Image (cartoon, rainbow, N blue to C red; front, side, top):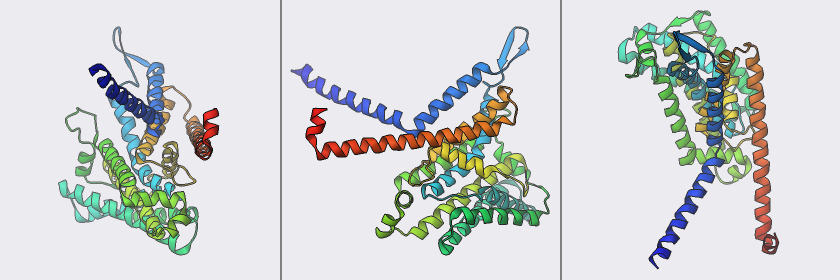
Length: 369
């Protein structure tokens, strides 16, 4: 009797574990992690081996500084991709993130230069001001979209030129150095060793986690999904559509400001040409991460992983000694494949839903099968 009594709970636990594993495997994040792991393995196998001492070779890719460098370069795009994902979930688009990045960066550098700010105060003031400029630029996009009723593509295409033009006129096209204290902050080793700079990666992970919590655990996040899933139903349900849209574009601008601060601090200078063309990489990271351009679908953690995957694809160009011109082709193919897989997954889910509805309506058909 005791053995039978123990067998029931164990069977229940096994079923729960199986369900948990199946749910994990079906997540977008699991698929991205598998692809990233496969790509890292391939690059490790085919990377050049360099002889450091007689008989001793090192892998040019499978090194801590190389992996950390890839993650660092992806962090600036990944931070912006979190905000872009929220915009795409509402079936919108933000083409101005690169220009917002440049605008926030140059305004912040000019302010710190005017204040002669140094030390920790420069880091705090610079971080807050750069984020505020990005937030304000994003809010301008949101207000224009909601008040004028013009498609986000057109509005953000216009502000893309306006914001970068303001940055160019303000700086005269010249680069501006950032205080050394900002570079010391962004390149702090945190005890990991010389040349290892984990601060941008930590900020990237923090932004992605906060974005995931906001989207998945708050009323504001649920409203974003509702607006993207069915805007008319959301309107009749009392969801403040305009406020939600202004908020997501403001968040997109905020993440651009955070990325601009981290990148400007890391590289030690900013300019009006910064992040030119990066808006396409940001959109690509969000789409590869599973955000649907039709709206209603997206995830902050997946956006971060999408940015890491794109950075790895870029790294593979140099690691495998492929001509640099092929980078655009490879990334373009990755975007197309991601969109096709998303459509196939959505279609399969729709078919499963129809079958489930049919079985509920006619249980005898499910029994016959």
